[in-house]
Length: 217
Image (tube, rainbow, N blue to C red):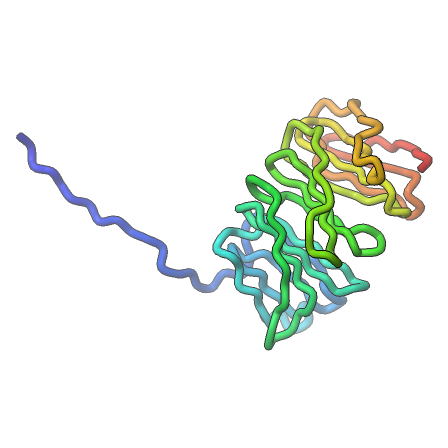
């Protein structure tokens, strides 16, 4: 009978000198301050001095997406375990936040409504969830995509939500009826990004190519 050989097992005890994560998540807070994902934390950098000025400690899972609302000062942070933290006050002494949990896997994208009272989240589980920021609760789930949600955009009036996914589809949602009323199927590859022009009538999306649609809401 052979001799069993024991091997040492190494466990992570800590990290040091992290500047930012490789996922490239970054948002501008002001003209001179930006927030970046750094594993499970969020770091704030002064772009003029190139120094870290503050940080938010995470929940243990890596940060997957960030979004900042300039009017109300909300910072929404999505994590790899499906948790969303919404920070309402950002200062060095105390960071107040509320927690939303509605995804089975990582949060891939976030979007604020024009009045910044509703937060939309898209997950790798193909789900879209709408959150009531004032009452700190979920509003509804929008099911229909078959792949990871890549981007979310509210229309200017806040009545509609546009979503893109790795299933190659772009869907248009009526937020009053909570139903998808139109689906674009022109793309033959996953849709990575989409954006709306100022008045919410021109939609552009791109992956390998770019197409423009003129819409009326």
